[in-house]
Length: 209
Length: 230
Image 1 (tube, rainbow over the protein chains, first blue to last red):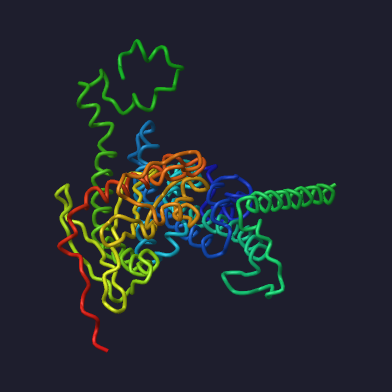
Image 2: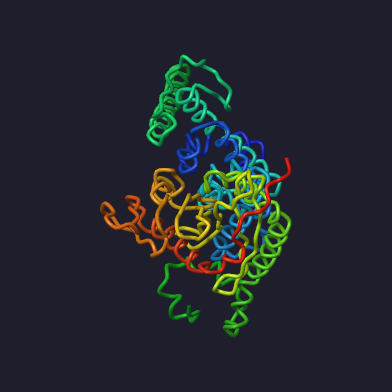
């Protein structure tokens, strides 16, 4: 398959050109649900990255053995196993955070980002490419969640990673840390990203003429 | 799932190609083909199962310890006036024949104030674990706490909130509690959470059956202990 992207292309694509949140609109559930602060958002990114990288590694290793009509079953089995490991690990070593994230850690199983990478990349390309792809996508997912969580935590609580940023005079916008804030911020940032992208493309077109 | 050529012809050309390629020509006996198709899934299931068993045996005790620490930290709020460091653990056999580890809530002066009973049961999504604060004779709820739950975010997970748990406080448990959707009129009625009736009923049922299981079993363990030497 000569037209498949190389490892470095996969890695770069995951970060911005095919950003899972801003470009593919995948993984919206954690994006909206756990971005009320940087700490839960980054824990979620860590857990998702672990599951994504491990499942991509495993699927790439057994890709020659996959039967086409049973592949989804194998992907789901693989993802569920690593999600359970991540969930138990959080429960053992980050108990408070595990309670705060609640059902969202087990819900990583249904994050389409992970199964889509198994389907698109890991089941078709080499181990190295699959790892680069998972790393790029995880980084892209992390940047997207960080951008949303930063806006929400600073405006909603005046803090970042729990550290005071805006001082005690800031009237915390409570709505920002509540569910409506997630939709507002995601919508505005998504619109912003599209606007910049459009402008860049238009400038490139006029420059080439 | 029939593999006869007749059914294959009704499918669009090429659609069934990959599955057929892996079968030897002429079509093998059905049993053999199932194993031939699914051996990877079966093998992976065994492999993942063992990995998860290993993870659970390694991390399980640590998680249980975290839960115990959390239990200890909430005992003073579940049985008001009790002291965390005076708590004694008592293992009792319930009516269902199972051993249950209870926490005996004791005040700083050594007087026995009540019990904290860990209980669990099926909720809407997953098992719910609660801690029930009880008076000494198990006749009155002194506090409730949800230790673990995976109920629907935004609906069922409000069972963790004080707003809901306060509805149990100071209720008599001489008759089983029931969940109602309108303003409670009877002493034993609990107002359900809007949109989370199943979760509300789950918590109430867990509480009812835990108390039912223990009633009359704790007399031998009641009684104050000697105050610590000053």
